Image (tube, rainbow, N blue to C red; front, side, top):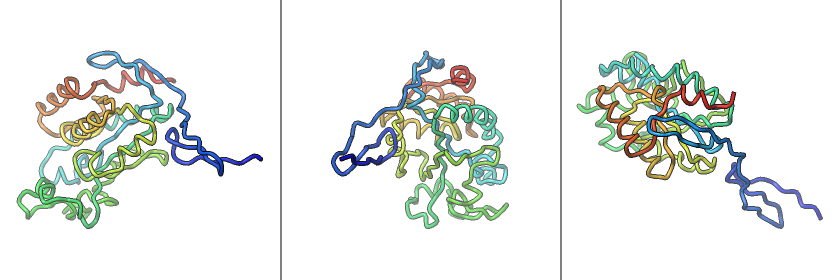
Length: 256
């Protein structure tokens, strides 16, 4: 008797099952090895096991009407990754590399936000902090679904992209990011976005601690912090946590 089968789960972490058997062998994706040049050594990596995290390219951090600008920060550097990301992301999508938008987007009730986190965004207690409306347009600071937490208009999110809200500087803390990556069979992570020395760096560190191979794409990343913070970030990534490259090096090795 022939028994029809169905797939449970997300490839490559999927089973094939019917009434009689569960096939748990998990067929793997076809490898797509490339040789990528980085600032320390050449890497042989598998595009079939690679994803890119685009971190916090949001209005509150990048737009002149957002929260950072409201508190007096020059957000001009935060727009620098837009052009290289717009060149790189379509090429990555074309070879099946998942694009994951990792954005700070809080719960409306802020129940998972501690006093210490509130203090970072409102150190005096009487300013505009998490969940408060921006004076310029009334958008609530880093609130999921608000203009303030939305990705800047210059970057296009496609339906096949993956979106993950985060609630700390690290995108792995209190989020489903690690489970999503493991279900997709991802072992190598590319990093872009802002701020390099804060949310990008802490997410990259946690990824390294969890066993992922980490590659910072330098021109797809920026910070509004002082230059020494940027230099320290590059040094620490190369010294301790992974590798540094740029989008032209990646575009050179991607299949056309």
